[in-house]
Length: 187
Image 1 (cartoon, rainbow, N blue to C red):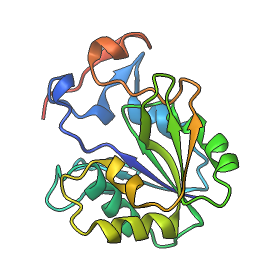
Image 2 (cartoon, helix red, strand yellow; image 1 turned 90 degrees about the vertical axis):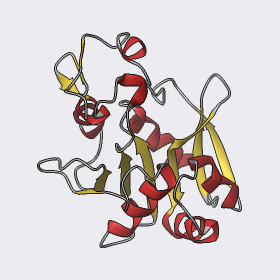
Image 3 (cartoon, rainbow, N blue to C red; image 1 turned 30 degrees about the vertical axis):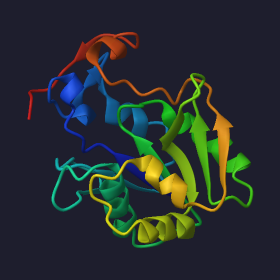
Image 4 (cartoon, helix red, strand yellow; image 1 turned 120 degrees about the vertical axis):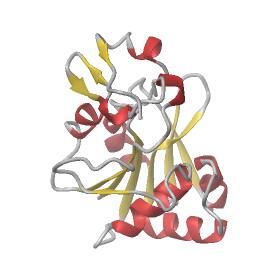
């Protein structure tokens, strides 16, 4: 499987820090997320930061929004597997949804997590790689486009009920429910 981890946002609600480097109980959000993934999968982190030991790419120009980041990530893979997962670094436990998304996708273009609060989570999703590429292509301009715009380009999307692991944490206060939060220096 191809896995794209979006980690390139500005982190404004966390004080302008690199969210991938925010730590909870001594482990960065990126490390927490990576620890749940199969190391045999092809993984790319979309971030303007260089992260040792991890394949990283960045959309040009940086800070182009989620769809531009997804496009940069997808274009970086040497081999297109049948499926491409899209995850966000500020949802550090979201990889736990991947097995369920994979069993539920069936013949659909994408399987996307539906959180308990009723919100579709396009950054906790599994796509058929060809369908994701087609959705990006049909959008045309990807800069500053929300991830939900991609879902509108898909012919058939399956919504899969989340189990709580898909929750994204936008602020330090939200993250503190997971443990002791340590922030890196601001960009």
